[in-house]
Amino acid sequence: MLSCIQNGDTSRLRDLLLGPQNHLNEGHLAEKMQDIDSVNALLYTALLDFAERVSQHKTPQGMSYEIYESIQFINQNVNRKIRVDDVARHANLSRSSLNRKFKSELGFDVSRFIMRCKLEEAKRLLTYSDRSLSEISSYLCFSSQAYFQNVFKKQYGITPLNYRNKTIIS
Image (cartoon, rainbow, N blue to C red; front, side, top):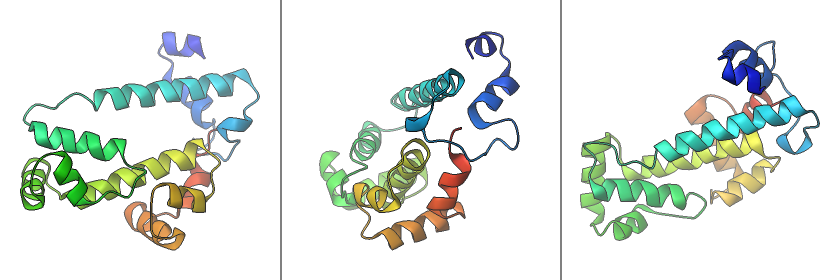
């Protein structure tokens, strides 16, 4: 594993991470991995995820401090029942000012971003944990498992269960 990272052998690395066939093989959950290559592949994936998350914490050029702080607040509270009013209060803005700035700077509204963050976290939980759909929907404060499944399928064109089956790391 380490040698393919050092040598830049991305095809070998991809095979280790996702399997040699279609790169979306069903396999074992992270908690059930037993061989060193699978554990190393998961470690590498976690490292990439960590690096991506760290890069997201840098304030992008052209983004106001209030919007940056709002994004951080949403990401840090993705597992809570947060509303646009909560984000506006955190950013010391009115709800309408926050929505206007968000739309102006990012091209979409705050509520859409909150949902996007919740769904991205759901994707991570489906991939890296064995939590049930009910537990995930409850953890992310969806009103019901059915609503979670409908929103997920509408956003990604696949049910959460099918997504899990396609992305399990072997």
